[in-house]
Image (cartoon, rainbow, N blue to C red; front, side):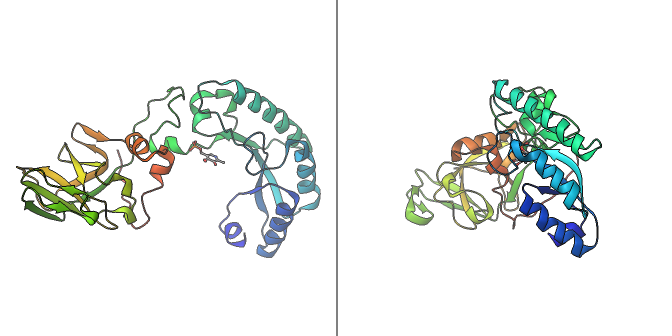
Length: 284
Ligand SMILES: Cc1ncc(COP(=O)(O)O)c(C=O)c1O
């Protein structure tokens, strides 16, 4: 807590114990800390019960002089779904609470509730600020979310060909010898494996793009490397860019494709790329 406060971050308060710990930490740091009250109106994760929210706000105002209650927020678990009914009711309940908390504080404070699903489909939830996550990567949160804004994927995961060889028909590739060349063919090795976030489930199922063309992963994905079948003739060279996720020419491997193959959601895909993979921030 002290480190966060020294950086001037706004922290969430969820219950009286949490408030008291923050109050003490702010006292030690010697600065007044800005906090936002988290109310659990339906997510069932963290947050004060709505029935206790006003009491907690009173506790903050009366007993925590080192804290400044500057905001109130909640989280919406089904805002990305096609049926808007439940979220509309949830937001209406939250807005009522915001009014009550502002009366306790005696001034207007920031209210926020919108994740990507609500930014796209629930204007009534926009309030003073929004908290889009997956949208920032250019992905819709769910197939059912209204596509009210055109999103473009902003993420690409790339490597380069590190090694090339031509193998004879019958040559096996990789651990477990799970793939055997059906014909003489060129195999590229790429320095990306499951320790980078190129999931082992892509063994004999994944694909990559090189210079606008799609090629299959053959054999098992290794910890740090994987193999790609380029076919009997190729112009691919060592050093060529290999796209694991993203666009190459007219071709695209999307996070939706990864999510489907891996049995997960784009959220997990975007945070699956390991920390050791260099991040490059490129403007449009
Ligand atoms: C509290 C909170 N706000 C906002 C978000 C962003 O959600 P999304 O990525 O669906 O926009 C999250 C993500 O889990 C969250 O936990």
